[in-house]
Image (tube, rainbow, N blue to C red; front, top):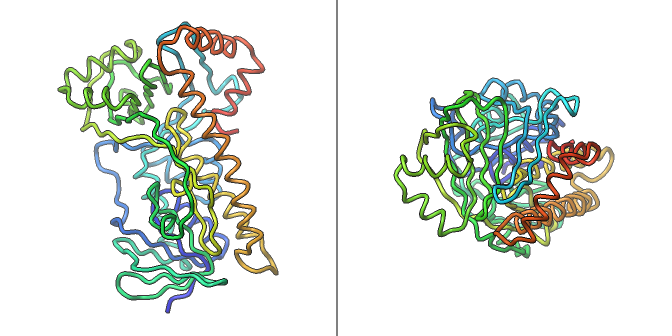
Length: 389
């Protein structure tokens, strides 16, 4: 029987970051993931990217993986431009105004996983099991027993469920979930643009939902996230590339010049999920297993990494105490649930405010964005929140 201090089910970016942080703290870790081993990036950009905040960057720097990420097509953005198509509202800010080198980085999710995987290969206290599933999980008051599909048992002092939005572990242990459908589908793709992005992340709020243009390492390429109604998304996905390019150019109001889809489009439904319970004795939820939110502010990955940072700190700072004590795990649950609640409420409020063509909402949007853009101290606070500082 293999014995470790922490078993992490889920080898996405959040799960692997936790594994690396715990390894640095001399905590033994087992990672289990049914997906294949992470691979080097291909020639084409992946269509799933994350806007990595400065707080998340600090975590990656602390774990010694940041330089690897910078070398793997990470793209810094120094400007943000947010506007409402249906009113006069607009807000723009840049890193110089905040005395920063950049506001954040756009990084392909596959690049994050591969960089973390390479670092973990050098850790003698981490066992990685990809292409591996488990057949059962049982827990006692002091341990969790995970039996792999091969029949091999793994005993851990703590089991971390990093197995995504549809977490099977969350369901097995009947951790109640609050959820609602955003009534949006998100279309993601890589787009080649006529004009260079000039390190600017753009977002325009359309009556049906927000469209984001995120700058990639090549100055003429963006990753787009177009959140819109299911009916409109279905229509957009049915268009030829030529027709989709025209619709995209109209939606972004020509800010980037002519647009050309560089790879296949993908679409997925958007749903808010929030676990009312993140802790069940020796099982704890993290990342998308605990919360998912609308991507309009690019916070999803960063919220998961904030979960990771706190859990690493709490599990590393227990000299002379029981490892993964109930007190430490309850502190994690209370702290991170509160932050998740705040961001879920904020995203819902923004979605409702910027959606539709109600004249009063259009006026509020226009006045509100213009006021923030013209009031230095408020704009400074808004910008700091946006970059995670």
